[in-house]
Length: 392
Length: 208
Image (tube, rainbow over all chains, first blue to last red; front, side, top):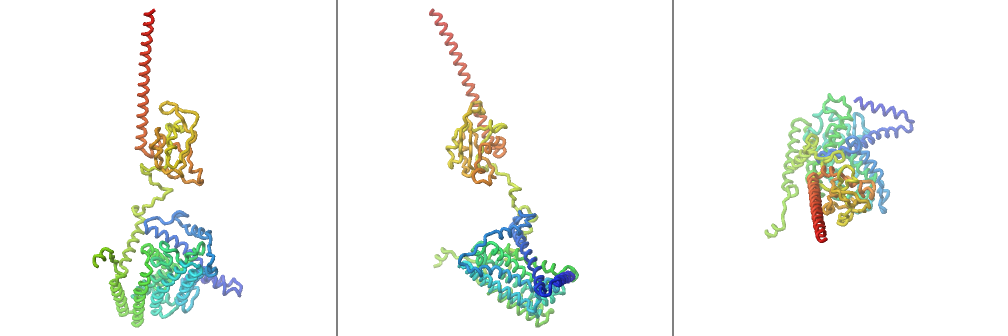
């Protein structure tokens, strides 16, 4: 905890140096600054890491030309993006077209403000932290629609509608799976959620029946929510024009990707906070390592998992995506909520473990069996024209 | 069960990810400017001119007969004859090119110039690194850029170069045989003429 206390002391010292009228603004600024700079930098590194790792998955070197081992690749990309011409369509709604990428980035950054990065190290410690997170997260849908509408391009508009349909569909299992944690902890404050998992690895929520399924559902919904592969139909660079980003170029286009990256970090940080013990060390002996290090470690491993998933899975079709959301994710998250309710009613313990675990297990296997018999989820069978002709 | 296939796929990609670090069979990338795969023997790109010996100007085989220039389908060769002649490998005085240009931006690498050349002087190169900063000048190869030694030809296309050398040896032998036959014929004719002259001399002497 010494590290967190040191940071807070430095902040207090700096705030006290300011004139009195500036102190509230200065304090807020000093709280925002580390988040904005560190996640901006982290995004740059993550792009490199992603390209490197995807390269290795495809048995090639990633970018390795700029700087030692390609380390300066993000800088080169940034310079390239900044020097590109910023084209705004003649008939576009200039204000909305301009505000959309900013709105997306702001909504992603705001989500990070309620994440506890360490003991007392939280920019905005409010009672309803998780509600705030999902509220500003939902604002990103507005920004995407602004981008689609403001471009005055029918493809951009359709792309935005497609993106919003997906994000709204996956928001439901996302929030329902997060709700299981809130039910058990009994608080909307993320500091309380982290505090409930302070006792070491066995108290982490992922190691409970409802937490395990909830975490998986949450991660899948997160992938869809931040438009990442395999749910990246809104962008789908190899199949469609870039959806709501069609009419964007130059730095605004880069801002979209930055917003996507920051949203990914925010979601991963929230996953780590809800299910993986937040900034706590897995074993109390290791708690001399500062909390932010643990949180960033968990966050980075989740980002690596996302990159791994991106390197593995093909893109879902729009109807498959919707079916998966409504037919699988939603029922499973409701079942998980019931399992969490059983856990709360039985107050933990062996009986709660068995009953909620059994419920989740039976629901998962039973439901996936039922769905596998439905034609959409089973391997495709092809009916050729000749055979059809013979049978008639 | 939903999710089993996904897990299988994840294991596969993880194997690729780790395998690319220790298994050279997986990571087959050749990083071009630093590493190069040696060209296959039959690889060919653009033509070049062969010279014998060490000095490219005196050893150049081309006699500027302009057959290649006429045969070239995209007409990328430009030749101007020189007024001065120089001896070829048989010792005969031959023409030589004053200007011999090949525009490699036009050349299509069809090898027709190689096939029509009666003096084994133009052959295909396998060099492909012709990128230049100038659109026109750097791709217009002049005589001095085109001239490459027979040793170089042996190094890039050994089998073909061997065949070419054999043709030239044969030519030299033929030439020598021809010269010999010519010389013999000449000597015979001389002898006959001499004997004839002697005979006629004797006859005139008789008549007198």
